[in-house]
Picture 1: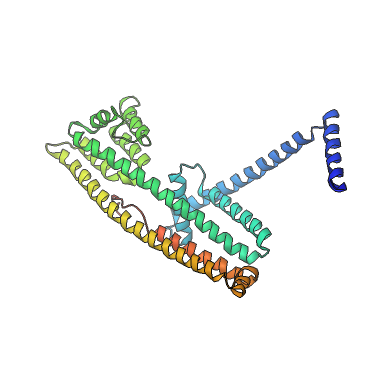
Picture 2: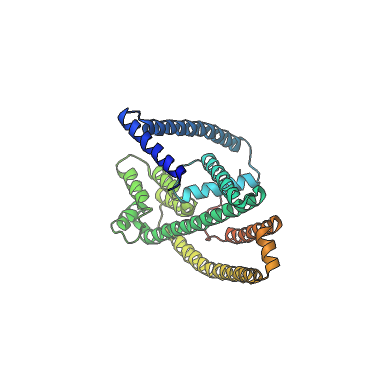
Length: 328
């Protein structure tokens, strides 16, 4: 063992022994200090983001937002937060994203020794993360929309005797209403029967939980409840037919996008294989791997591939029929 490591080991042993004998509580106090520091910084960040959120909401209520990059970004983050049931605000999520970005730049700079290349490479990583979140968010939204459609298909044929009665009959088994949205229908029943809600209030609350995908059913259910006439229950048949059409179109669309993703991945793989083959040339390998210009080109190519794939995923999404609200 070298004298340095031997001295270091002796110093650690002596320090730990004195800390124990003298009850210095060094480690506990250090942990407490960092915990208090973290709590203080987190509290400051929460207050700052709360103020930003309040200003954003006021601005959105007063001024009609233009469809610019910031509005699109806020909508994207809001979709992520709702899809993954996260309690963060948009501003808090943005702060965390900025912190992760800065950490990745610092870590990559330690290995690449170039801040510009590290920045470009970090952008690629962040785009890849956003793309993954976008894909997972889309899958969750599609699964939720399918669950709502299944529930509508089960309720609509029974709605002739009343929507509340139909919901109660369907809720008697666990086959038709998915576990994720089942609590909302249970709350709807409780609101109508035990909490004194009117049917309109209970259905509006259920609609708020299930989102715009449920707008058509909720509107027709309220109309049927307060204006029931002979033959009026047939308005629910349109919902079942629409769900069948949407399912068919989504199936065709998913097949088309799967082929598009497969073609993109195959072309990308061919480019990577050609690049690996080209590295067998010593001059090319030395330029691409050992020079700043080569590293810059590599990181830029990775960025282009990530952006291209992310844009392709952005174009994908399940078809959802939404009730058009009147403009005013």
